[in-house]
Image (cartoon, rainbow, N blue to C red; front, side, top):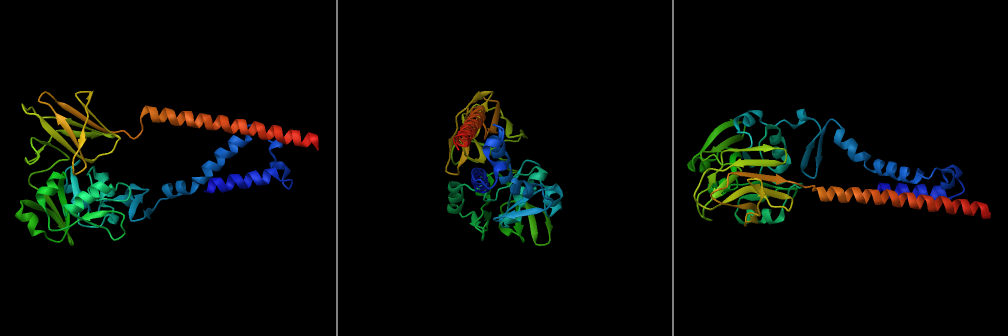
Length: 314
């Protein structure tokens, strides 16, 4: 919006006789493309200032942090008790930012925020009575009564509860720490974000040997003589790509909206990658930018020629 207003204001001033220095006939042929680029950059200046400003920024119930010091997980003692690359869910609203701050400790979140909300996934969690929507409607948080079996199938290993949770303790979850009114519980089944299922009702066989590098997760599968389904507890999107032993592998989506990858007895290494930008899309954007520049140069040339012809005729 800012860009459009600025461009049309410049065009009106340049076309009028009140500001001859802004007239296109007095400028080099590259002036219009350069001016468009500058105005486009100015349009994004408020966003740039917001990102680099050294303070916490709150937007619609979701928190963004410009400095790591402002994004410390609270309470910090809980983060030290959690295994890296495991998954935590909280009873607090997502506006508390636990999902984002846990990432600095390499812990995966589970609560929903406006930037990761998935309508079908949210409906699934609501139908299972696992969550409640936040007051600001920007996300959700987990609620009691705690259904430990369903939580474990979501890959959740830790729960941060508001006060003691006797139902978790009865389900063999252990209280690992508490500070104030917050309690940290851990499942003694030690769930991970990845597990194998032989049937839809079988108990999860959690993958223990896995690592994350960049946007990819690498899994070392246990040896098995059975055909199984690998569940990756990430909400399905077209940008997810899966390879098994360096060969592409198709996957399906279950009612929980997670990735379901067929695994054969001879499969050993699985790579799950989130690739939002493909080489084809990057090349398309490059071509689009190139055509935009050529179009701007063409328009600049036509306007300059029209201005010169108008002055000669007058």
